Length: 318
Image (cartoon, rainbow, N blue to C red):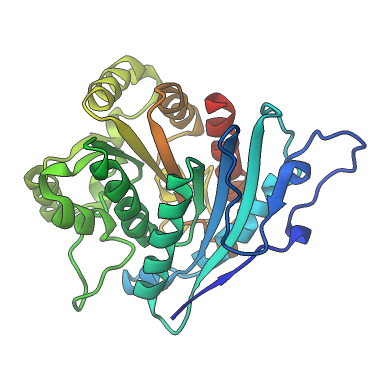
């Protein structure tokens, strides 16, 4: 079974200020799953996924279930630069209980469907990357009902197109599951792919599923024009975008606290160029940040990187 718990307002703290200057002053924790209907305002809803069963099934190092709280703690003291018309709500966390990842996925899908139908912008904090399956499923359902195309952009060292393990999904399979479910409607661009982390069989799967990707060797700041052209081509072909940021795509020099660290990952500078492009496209429907493992973080550097990615995207959008 899955469980939902509201966030405690005490998690959102920061420097004392008599005026509203910081995130912790602007975030309102909701006591239940009901989202206020604010038709005349721009609304951001934060939802946490406290689960690392998918990481465990994929033989990763567990601890990503602690990620959502770590991100909230470092977001609280950040300076706030959004318009006063933007409302930010914290919808709490969905917990995986007794290894029942599938039940938590169903709850996440249902909650995200409600958020999107309320025309709010969801920010989902992981948790393992298995989160992308319920997240993507909710978005596909919403977009396809409107006769539109959804494009998935994933900043990641891995395709996450692995097949089931013992008939079950895991943190390495979410985009395989989405591809199998939505077939010709599956439009997927992965940025930062590392050859050392993806066997030949996954490149074959990616080709078979019509996936677009840029390998790590080409994903650097000096190659921005080529990256921008591929991003532009992909975004022109879809109506809405689902952005997923797997923190293990960053170099471990910037993101040591992840489930699968790599010294050969990309830099925050190129990631921010991509995030700026996506935010300014006007097509971003939802986003998540996954695979933070606070047990291996150093001075909260990975949690801060996650928080800065979120703040940057939202500031550029609003």
